[in-house]
Length: 569
Image 1 (cartoon, rainbow, N blue to C red):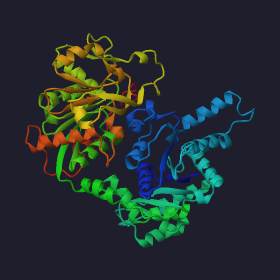
Image 2: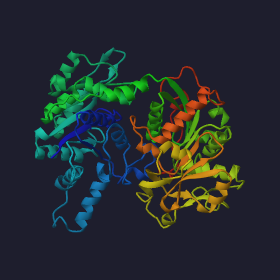
Image 3: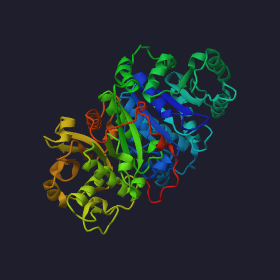
Image 4: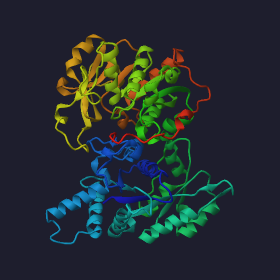
């Protein structure tokens, strides 16, 4: 039976439980332990697949095609764990299963209640992570904040779970806030005390506290927190703000968090170093030799989490060439109304990410045209590939009004169209082309040069595809179809023949990138952007004050209007 770690959060949301969970996973893997991670989400949606990015952030897709919480992306980036649909549990899934069982009469006439039926189903799903597999540790992150009504069944379930498996086999780690009051010049522990108090009212005594803070915690302050929260001072861990999220495992290691966890769970203590992580990841992020500026032209740029995996994959691509990537967020809607040169003239590369709905589409197409005509390295992802095909059809092939049937069902040139099997779909959730699927690469192409492989597996999330009726015409005009599905049925990757580096994929490569294993397409994209800059090509100028991986100040504005109700992803 594996050991279990349950991670909860208090005081405020967005403290970084996902990063903390992933960092603990990295710490324990460094000791040679096999780790699995799981997110328990208290919202009623079955999954985030139909949620607007402004509500939830990006939808992370697993190998088996599950649409999950973005924290699963952190889990996979920090650890070697390969996640699936069992690694993300929602209230919607739990209640759906319980109600289905009730309708089938499986409860033998009993009154169905939150306790024990809902809590039992949650415990079953916690155990399912390790069912038939050998893990040393299962880390389960409980979403939400202690005190939320929605998360109470999950907290009750993990309380019961600990009673069933024993204290020697499970621990509770609570992430909380120790704010710095600038007017008083002091760190305040009272919010942490209240948060732990709420948790103890539910019946959970945390074994370890992770104290999110912008200032260092003194020994006296840790002792005070330990005294009032019924913990040893050694179990009060400082989770201070850092320049890069990839520093967090090092911060935890320096304070002996792995030693405390090992002692509480009765694990043999192995030193387990993070020297390679420090040298090959963190040092290259903090002290890069080069820098580039990449424009991400999207429709949800006001929200940092909407393109979380893409931003991280760009950083990973920079690590491979010892390059800091400054991300310039560009609103596709601004390009709808203006000239792209104003926003893109000084960038070294252009990336157009995925999305749904018509808002900002013409702006994305303008950005792609600018990158094509000015020979700026371009990477298109999902919708970014579809828009690249539309731009090529209009401006190279001369097909006036070419479009996707998603945006114009009556277009005379539907160069992007709905998959045949999607035409009868009524439910939106979980019905797209999802998960890891094979792609055959043609030799002597940019894609093959990046991957150095004939066959790759990449994760998809879309309904629309390249219209095969236009294959021959576009190929003749210089749009190379470099990646195809088995049997050459579907176009997965397109390139331009007369461009330094212009690649667009129907799949989402960002979901398989890690800081110590950058994705080949992001690695090559950043490398060619750097080549453009260092050869002083047009569009390669960047501000001298750039700091590693910083976001341009112009992009910190809040959204000025709510997204259209029809744009659910």
